[in-house]
Length: 297
Ligand SMILES: [Zn+2]
Image 1 (tube, helix red, strand yellow):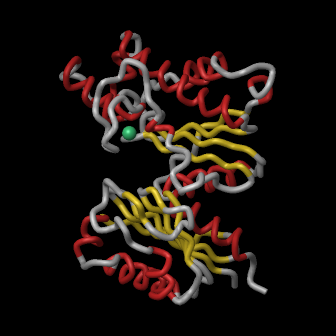
Image 2: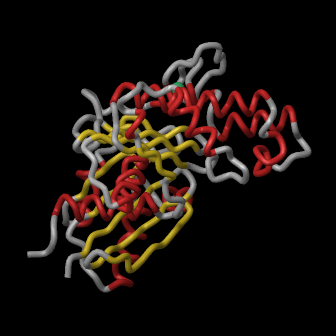
Image 3: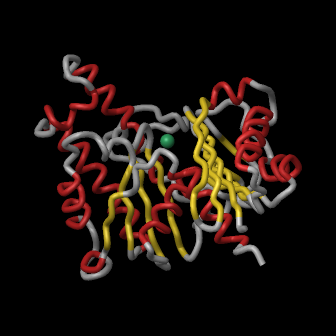
C-alpha cells in the first residue's frame, strides 16, 4: 500500500491528512497554540502526528508539512513565521526527518493549498498562479514546480507596494497590498464604517460602497500584475474573503481580465475558484510528497 501524510501547520489550526493508495483515509484538526505549548522544537506536533498515524495503523513513506512562513532557498529552515511563535530559525526538515524516519518536504502553506487545487483540477500546467485572499494574502507561483526565487522569498504578492497605501504591514514595510486588500482591512473598514453590520455581510450590504468596490478593484489589479509578469495558463482565486456571501467574484474576474495583456494570456486564461475544504493544505502536502516519492514499488 502506498501511504503518504500531510501536515498543515496554520496560524490557528493544524491539520493532519493521511492518504493510502490515492484516497484520503484520515483528516484531523487541532489548535496550533495547544500543540506549540507542548514544548519547543515542534514536540507537540510530532507527538500528535504519531498518535494520528498510530490510529490509522499505516506507515507513511514520506510526509509533507506546510508552514505559515517564508522558508530558505533549500526549503528546510524557517526564515520568518510572524503568526506562530517558536518556528523562526528551525530546520524543520532535519527535525522531522529525525523524528519520523522518512523523507519530509517543507513548503509554504499556500503552495500546498495550490498543489491541492491544481491536482483537483486535473490539469498539469507549465505555468500557473494561485492567489488566496483571507486574513492576509497568500500567493503561489508554479513554473514547472513551485517558483521560490533566489532566496526562498518569491511569490509575495501581499507585499507589493500599493500607491496611496500608508498603513504599516505585518512584515514591517509601509504600504503593502496586505494593508489595503485582505480580511484584516475589511474588518477595520467594518468597525469604522459599518459597526452594525456583521463582517460576513459586508459584501451583501455594502458591496456598492466606493471603498468596497475599490477593494475589489485593488485585488483585480494585484492579481493582474502577477498574471502579466508570469503569463500563466491557469489561475486559482480563493481564500476566506472570496467565500464571503455576495462577494462579487464575476466582477473580480472581469476586472482581472480587463487589466490582463491581450491577446495572451487574456484570451486563453482559465480562472478557477479555489477549493474551500478546510484541509486542502494538508491534503495538498500529502499529494505533493506522493507526487515526489512515487507509488510503492
Ligand atoms: Zn508587507
